[in-house]
Length: 302
Image 1 (cartoon, rainbow, N blue to C red):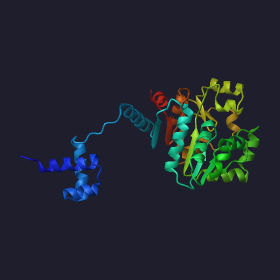
Image 2: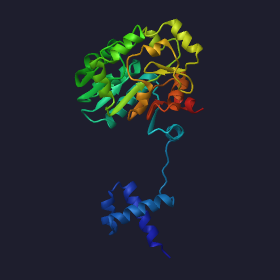
Image 3: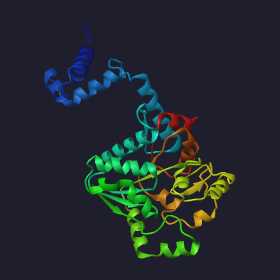
Image 4: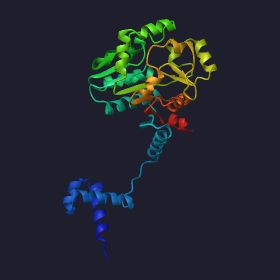
């Protein structure tokens, strides 16, 4: 005996998935309601009439993303398959720019940390035609932010904290944090739609070293205190506890606690040397979204 319901299910699935008809077109063809077609398609998936097969490499990468989301309570994770022609930094920066463009509308407000990866992201956003984007700095260091975007920043509006990143003393830092211009930018950052930050590792070519933000002796002392990396120049250990240093007391910008309170914080970093730092920042609950490469993602989960 012919199972009419089963035949309807197969015909609905065939016409929808293989013939690429709309659900309404399938409904008209079968002489049923669109709601009935939706139910038939759901039944086809549940009964195995329709089976979706991902390429093995895509399936593995999606599984890694879900593992990151589940383990660290993230809203989202984006694991980048690195192309041979690109560096890891370039791959994750391009992916981050695309992610931001898809989730932040024109005229949106984006908080940005400092660093090479952040500069690459802003260049991709500017060159990608993202219009009327408002970019707010999360730290001091005007001389670090301006070269990030250069002449391509015609469609980006910059709101920068008018102060250095690290100042000479605690007293200078406290005075600057009370300045109206500094407070205004910090207030803006607390209301932004999204924040994007880089994560630094404890390596000799770290941005904080290359830019002269900290000295070799300070870097060595941080290593001796079990620092694994930094976010916004806040150095942390493997459990995301702040390392107590003179540097921390002289920083001008967003605190780690304030960062944790912000909505849609996107961490962007990649490379095997950054796995420990990224893992620490994730454990500390600093991020809502992580964008990294597949190799680094697996190292974080290992």
